[in-house]
Image (cartoon, rainbow, N blue to C red; front, side, top):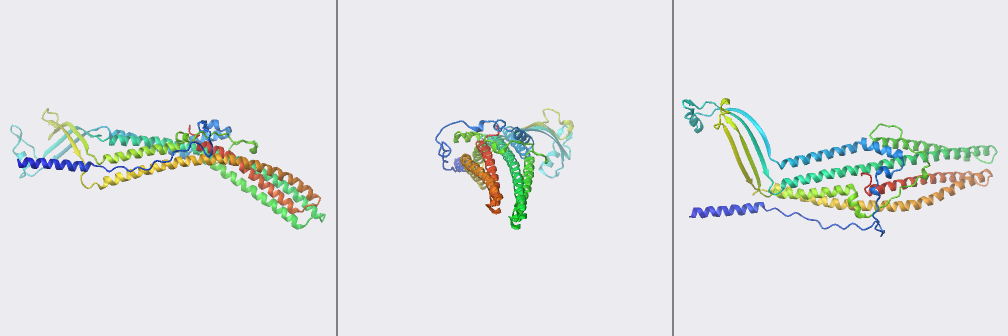
Length: 479
């Protein structure tokens, strides 16, 4: 009776230890993030019209730019690398899905064994007859043909959660590809407008060189008539040389910008076909920001961060399941004999097995605890990254909307400045010819006019790029 009680106590203690061994720590949680504002900036309107829903080949009106983007979407190396990441993630889903199913295989083997005569096995084999008058052969062969299967029963949904995590990471790579597409389109548009701006600046510099050269000739004539000095001549010559140097600087920038576009298109250097219309007459595309909450659905990087957060939460569940018992089932069926001719002698050669193995970590679980802590930390990291991505998306759109408004005001003022300086050039030239102003005022007027025209072109370029950036920041371009 005492032995029976001791057995009962042993079982109870074992069960208590098993329960204690299965206990898993709780996952940490972060404080709730702040909700997305209802509007951008101080706007109060709740207009849901969103430019991001417009397809990129409709948003851009310049056919040359559309053609460049179309080539880039086919040849860009970074985009193609991202597509391979999608394939890798897709294969990982297949691996995780396969772990849910039993592993089945076939094996065939052959071997020979010689044991000592004065051992229990050797003595038993020596006294055993296979058939009347036929002793067990020595050495003893072993020939096997069998099918086998192993299966981990997914009691705690560890394998299913692992598969779901892989699926979410696959979807995250798809969104990552969409984010690359959005940024690629915006980068090509930026470079294209930069190229148009440089072309216009080059024309302005050439016109200025002609104007300065004409003024230089006038100064030379005035010097011959003793109405100007050698100092005035040299000053005008220096100004012409400065403008010519600027011309070559712009030519180099044009070359580098063309090569940048060619790189994005995945091709070797060639001339970029572009529009010849007056750059300053181009109008930025009109944009509608919609509501900030739409960023959650339209921005690929936000959706990617959300999917990675879901995957990280599933990883915590997988790591938590490691604390619980696992059930493995194995089975085998086939034929086995010590001689090939006996392999298909039924039923004597038939072998089969069926076993279940239930195991749970009990002592020294530091590795499991460490993996669970790492999974929990990665979950919090993914949560903070998700919040950061949403905040960044909102601020990017807010900045670009403000920039569009301020650039328009700046462009209007700089246009008036250019008109005033163009008029001042004519006035200064007339006054200089009549010796009513000196060469210094003419030089400064021409220099100010050139700088203001170049700044006006830069402002126009920034206007065009700001519209592109709003389109990108709203999540447009990948659809």
